[in-house]
Each structure stands twice: as C-alpha cells, then as structure tokens.
Length: 284
Length: 285
Image 1: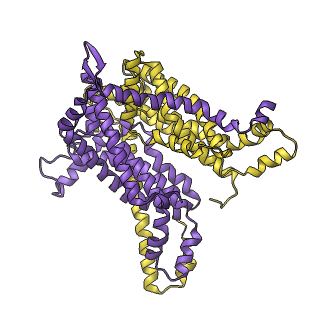
Image 2: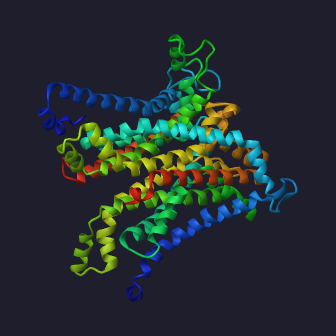
Image 3: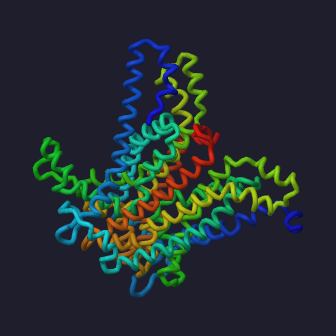
C-alpha cells in the first residue's frame, strides 16, 4: 500500500547508515499509522461483533454466544422501529432543505465576489464552532419562550440549522477546484446564464452536492445532543439508544448501528469509485 | 431575466438570502433568547420572568466551578492526544497514501458512520471490568486486582479523544495534502536534513490544519456530556452534564441558560487566546 517508489531515488544517493535510518523511520510511521487505524476501527469491530451476540439479561456488554436472531429480528424491541422511522423522515427532510439552502450560499461565495463575503464566511463557520449543547440550549430557550410545541417540527428546524454550514463547506470545497473556463466557453458558444448553469455548472458540481447531502443526512441521523434538548416527547434513534442505555442495551441496537454503518460506507465507496473513474489513472 | 441582468450585483445576495435568513432565525435569535432566559427568575410551576437576575451567573460559577474546570481540562488533554495520534496519521496518508488516499480517509471518518452513542457504548464493552483489556492489564500488573478502567477519568478522556479524533485528523490531512512537495524538495536540495525540512517547511505550512483541528476538537469536547455519562460517574461529570440535567431533569431553565452562556464565553476566550498565540496573519495568509 505504501508507495516507496517516490522516496527511492533520493535514498539511493545516501550512505548505508542513513538509508537504514530512513528505512526505520519510514516504517515507524507506517506502524504508527496502522496502530492509529486499529484504534479508530476497534469500536466499530466491537459494534459489528456484538450484533451477533446472544446476551444473557438486558445488557449486551459481555460476549455470550453467536446468534443470527438479532439480524433476523432487527426491530424486535418495543419502540425501536418508530424511532428509526422518525430518524429517517427527519434526516430526509432536513438534508434536503439544508442542501438547497447551503448550495445556494456555496455558489454565492465561490462564483461571485461581493461586499460582505468574508463576513459571510465567518458567519457560516460559527455554528460549526459552537458546542452542540449551547446550540441546543439556545434553540430550546427560543421554543420555550415562544411557547412552541416541542416535537417533530422543532427537531426538523434544528437539524436544518446545524446542517447548513456543513453543506456550504462541502459544496464550496468542490467548487473551488472548478474550471471557470468551461462556463465561459459555454457562454461564448451562445448559451445564456441559466442554460450554462443547468448544462455545465450543475452537472460538474453535482457530486459535491450529492456528497453534501450525504453528510447532512448522516449528521442528522446521528445527532443526539441538540435533538435531545428540542425533541420534547418524540424519540429519534439516538434518543432511543440513550433511553435504552439506562435500563437495557438490546443487541438490536448493534444491528441497526451496523446497518447504518454499512450503508454509509457503501455510499462513500460508490462516491470514491465515481471520482476514480472520472480522473485519469495515477492522478491522485 | 432582464431585470437580473441589470442588477447583476444582486445575484449573490439573492443566493445568500434564504440560507442566511434561516441561520439568523435559528442560530442568532436563539442566542438572544438564551441570554434573556439566563437572566430570568421564577420556578417551573409559576413560570419564569425576566428580572436581570445576575445571581444566576454568580450561582453558576460558585456552584459548578469544578465541572467547568474539568470540562476544560478533559477537552484540553483529549485535544493534545488527538493531535499526537492524528498528526502522524494524517501525514502518513497525505505523503504515503498514493492513490489509496481517499480510501484511507474513509477509515478516518469510519467512526462517524456508527451512531455516536453506539460507538461510545462500544467503548463501554471494551473497557468493561471483566473485559479483555482490563484482564490483560491486571495480568500484567498494570491495573490493581480491584482496579477499574470504566468509571474513571481515563475512560472519559479516552472516549472523548476517540470521538473527536476525526475532527482533528481531517483538517490536518487537508493542510498537509495541499503542501507543494517542491518546497520540501527544495529545502532538502539546500542541505536541510529531513527533520529540519519537516520543522522548517512542512510543520509551518500545516499550521492552518493544526489550528482548525484544535478548534474543531476542543470546542465540541468541552461541551460534551455523553462520554462522562456513559463511561464515567458523577465524579467525572462535566459542565455539559450539569446543563443537560438542569434543562431536562430539574427544568431550571435560567440556571441552565446561564451555564450555557458561561461555557460559550469561556470557549470564546480560549479560542481568542489561542488565535493570538498562533498568529492569525500566518494562518489566513
């Protein structure tokens, strides 16, 4: 996996001890990186493994035996299915609205220079650097003071809000490397602004918008802190896990966790392969 | 269309309007209400009214000083450890990853795809009293016979580090990846050793990533309460635990709002001090 080829020509010119040192250093870093990867992936392996556990009692913390029951019966715990459905509905709606609003901001920031651009950039960055508990707390005080009913609507508004910044950042990252000459060429060939946008700009930034939508969806499904504060009596999947963790941890939670993980990884792999196919081999 | 042509300058503002209006309504306005609530007085039964009740703030500081300090301490330690783990990792991917870079990045963000609470519960499984890790440490004599890994500050800090490591590694990777390799080659051609080239070229050029990574790790870590709740005991509780229980359990909204406001201010001060320390002009330039 390592590409030693890049460093070889330089190494050949150096003396034997220096080469040995370089070799050790090269591999020290690699070993360190592998350990870091192991650290990152260990809990994921545990989540997957324990989805096949057959726990005695209510808590799924100690390994007892292998079973497929949990996978055959993923919703076999009261309230779990409703929680997942609510999470999915919120995530679809929140990621859709956040992607639309965020993409428009991203387009404005990259394609136009205008007064207040720097301020806007800073403003977009703010929600990402505010602790979730503060955002959740402030939204809750807003809803309480206005006498709004906590539930589906307040969760949805909160999710759109915290997703917008992430969408802007993702779309903008994709737009920065974008070749403006393609748009100019289209205009030179007589396309008007709207046609150019539809036929040239949009297809080129579509992967960025898609990635942004995915990120928003994932953040929405995963969010606990803000949702917990503004949810009232409604229960999303993370809230369900939180509530369950006090009295029981059914292995079905691991099944759903594993399923979410697999779907997300497949979508990301799909996105990477798509990028690979679009760029010439060897370019990275 | 012709109207737009005549007012081309208005296009970016029109694009910005809906999104920024939304953020103004649900990010900025709520902060006003947070401030307002933090100065209210009353009880959950009679309702709360605004009275400039600054006592909420003095109470918050005197009563929950230790939780505030603990939050900053845990977040600080977790940030340093994430840096020590994340920098070499990001460096390795950026410089040795070749065409597998995107795939390797997927490993870094992998944890994000497992629900936050579930991956924290997985750490509970790993650190269990009868678990493999605790048993091994006991056999090696590194942990006393009754020693525990769970319910300690080590467990909480480990959990926080794990959960925010991707926030550290990703910006580091982005800044390392963008470095023009020719600059490093030039340093080496001019007889700088590898270490010196790293210290004088690579490291300074990766500072924006260090800066962003530190902020993106420290800020959410300081407000975290899930790790302390699931992996610790009330003795490890952070300010987030206090805030959430005031909102959700006791319904003492003014006190909770005051605590949130202080947390926000403390983080702002820490961030400004840190920005001063690192020098903004070097980062934005």
